[in-house]
Length: 362
Image (cartoon, one colour):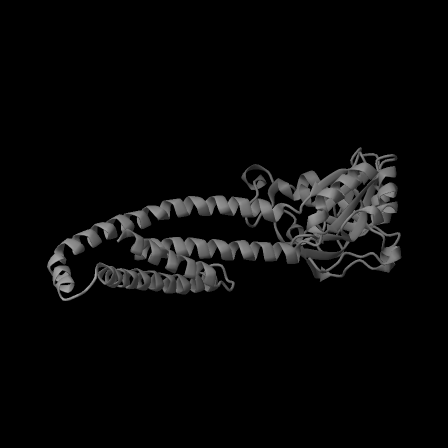
């Protein structure tokens, strides 16, 4: 019984703590929950009718462009990329996947004081974009690009990166003025952060794209997505509001599987206890007969036995939950590096549930 309660209690408590931490992290880190990518006239239509979107709490939009890396510091990109075994990504080498960090740009309208927010990123080297970057090809690049092979010591503040448009007809040489490191969700979709002037210069005629980041009240997300679809029928809409629900569903499935396995030990304990109680009653027939002969009623004897078994079950469950509390605290501090607690309702529910089942067995 003790082992069963401890196992199930630990699974339930850890699962609840992990679920709460994940939901809390998502709520704090995700600055948007709906992403919409529009092209050409749809961007202007959506911008004009943002006020009609139900539950819209905040929004921002930036132009984006796909880019193809050509050279770094005037060296052809093909000559810098690793070959053979080094082409595979590892903890210290981006391999050929380094091209991803050079294959897309978001443009900020720095003339109107639209700059990359430091809420979800940190400038580790150099500086952020500012108003003086208007009309220039100054950019920020991600931390892995500057600190992991194959571009470690190649890309840094002051380096130049030559990129071409997707069709290869337009080309610009970018100058790195800063290196940033993402610190959570909700920063940007494209890896290179530049100005809207540079994005415009790398966008073939008729293929301009604008990305809208929207924070919408959870209850209104479905309605808002429908409204966006009507305003801009050709837009690509990504609903990120259900990420927490998706993670919770996976976590719940895992917990149910673990609880089902742990329940086998609890079931074994229940059967063993039921057998022990039945044998104990057979052995105590003489004692019970004496009690009845001196005036005890069947009701009083039943109450006495229920109290005995209830105390045994209660103490076992209480000790198990105390051990769960200790184990949860240790796992939180040394494994997950965060503060975990035990929900009082879960603890009381398990203790009283075991108490009731023990008395019912008798």
